[in-house]
Image (tube, rainbow, N blue to C red; front, side, top):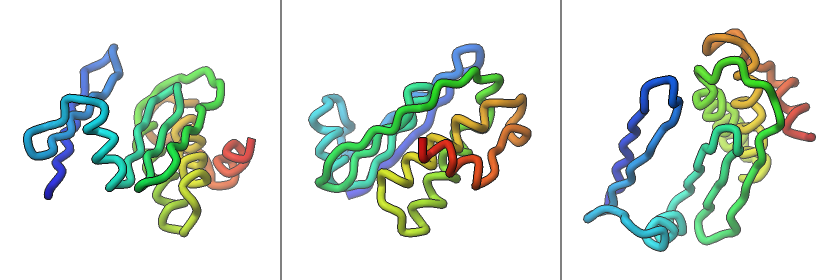
Length: 130
């Protein structure tokens, strides 16, 4: 069975992203989505609301985003991904990886553009510990 993820971005000023997950006939009910989540590692980025992870057959985890005055969200999702992969590929548990991801994404919004606000590893780790 194959899962296809299609990412549709809505143009600014909305700055929203919508993910349509197609699974055979498609998913239309929340229960069906949770069935897929029980077989896959799914991480849902929720912007200023943080992120939620649905591990295989396990407990759902949520990491809240820190309060911050965002300047520009350009690249925040990519920074989140980088933080999550750093932890996950370093054999960290899901909770710690998710915390670092949220810290990286949040800190990246402190400056204009996708690069200027990128945190150092130490900055991200310090925020993730809070």
